[in-house]
Length: 53
Image (tube, rainbow, N blue to C red; front, top):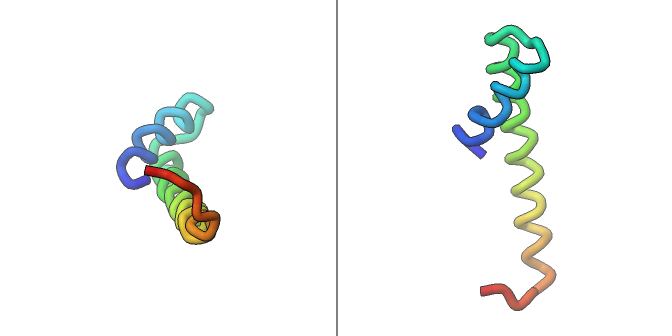
């Protein structure tokens, strides 16, 4: 997700009371989780051979 994930996650974590340094670190760890999940979805989803453009 890159910078987009941090832009979305940091304000949400700040809203729920996390300090800014914890919010940035948590957003970075969430980014790794999203990258792994999206990579898995891309790799195994390509076997479905759907008629996508």
